[in-house]
View 1 (cartoon, rainbow, N blue to C red):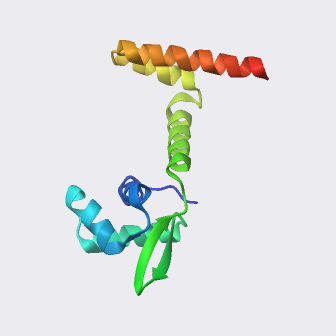
View 2 (cartoon, rainbow, N blue to C red):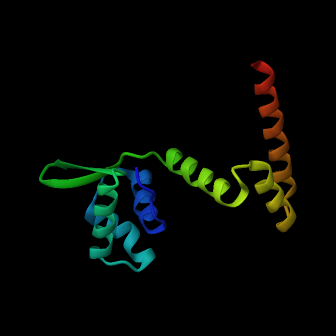
Length: 126
């Protein structure tokens, strides 16, 4: 599948939240917030169909769309792309960057410590 653009991701978010949807429903959900008209939304839907990120289904005389890519798959791809482009594929430099340039809340530090402990425990099980 081709990369989903930032504009296309708005269409996908609407579908992940409430699929399947007709074009008019997608326009109503996404259009006003992005200041997009019907033609723009339909163009983005067609791009996503060509990328095989969506499928169209005909039911009751209406065309409805549903995602072929899960939100989790999309997030994984986008996250890995960010890591690869900016941090050589390494997670630790990303966390270090944010920790140095943005104040971490105590609960974020606690969650990170808990995550590290869980990952270490998983490693011990192997």
